[in-house]
Image (tube, rainbow, N blue to C red; front, side):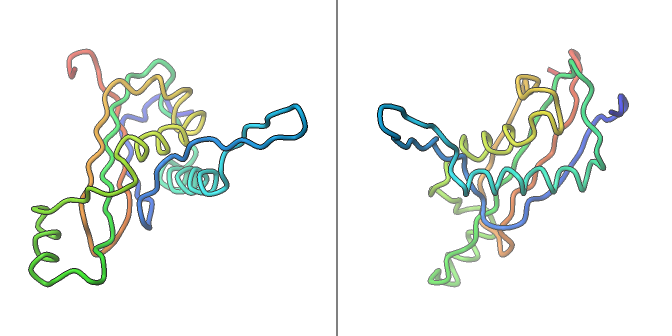
Length: 149
């Protein structure tokens, strides 16, 4: 662990993905709860791109963290040129799923014990949704001090 890590930025390529609800299966009198495969796969993708950027470093224990996430959605193929331009100028923004809070949840949950000891260290966060020619999720995490709140 590197005590000097103050900030990191990384990108998860592809369409934004949100945390899915747990699934349940019944085996006789017992109910088993499990995480959907797609959620687990995306969480592993988040960890992979974080580790690539951080080179195995974590934020110091007890640090207060600020997380900024920008989700860029793919522009639908059938979009008119005028509407496409407005989307790229951020005048039209995605009002479709996944919801902003599920995007934030999957990213922050994925980074538990990878970027930080627990996502309770996140004291400030923002998730924004835009359209782009290149669908992706950009993540920035930084340490904030009491003077920056």
